[in-house]
Image (cartoon, rainbow, N blue to C red; front, side):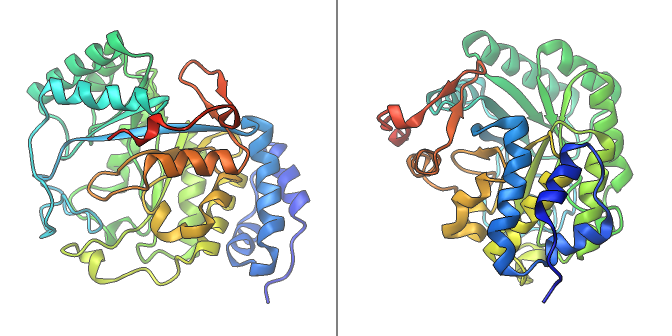
Length: 347
């Protein structure tokens, strides 16, 4: 049995802005299951200090699917994937607006606009910028764009168009990155994040847990995100998709308790950041999903890129049952205990 930690002391270290040591980080990941509730309580102490009991909702649109020249081993849209997915170029503006309407209907604060590919061409970037301006003119939604590798000129154009945030995940540690992708480097991803920050856009960057990484890789990823001072951190848990290299190697360590310990680790290392439970939430946390809201303060509502998510009504009910409140796009809160949750049923 792993030695017991003083969870309150770890929470105080995190709240003081001090970086927890690697040995402590490892013990967090290796903690005995009997320590889980104490661990979650300490992580919630940090989360509550910055976020109280608010939950942010993000809505994701896969606006361009497949047709990607990269070889990311986890991705069903990569050039080496034989997964049976829809493949299409950038959606027409009308469909993008319909998706934004749906995001607003579900009380999502952020509309996440994602395209596949290494980087956007000039014509695709022009169309993305037009769509961003149109959505902004019709809805009080924050826009998070995930467009692949970006240079300084591209990020400056996105900033001028009103993009609030750009997502570009590190995905894993620098050490593990060559094991999951060979067509771009960890440094390429760092460069994109720095270009986004230089343009004055806030950054969204996280990772995928369950790709054969070690505990040190998980810790290194969290340390890297802290060093970059990213704003929003999505934590994905690998869904092995048949037809992808990692689809043939199902993760063996992703039981619900370990996933919760990972979320606690990221909260302790990134105390003030928005931490979002992203892809794989329903698959790997299963019945313990509500406990994930104690370290994390954000979730996706609706589907993911090429995999389905939990029904929106179930997400709303989960938030309500756990006693959390919804953070509206304008920063106000909606107490779901006082609402009739019916709008989320609409498809």
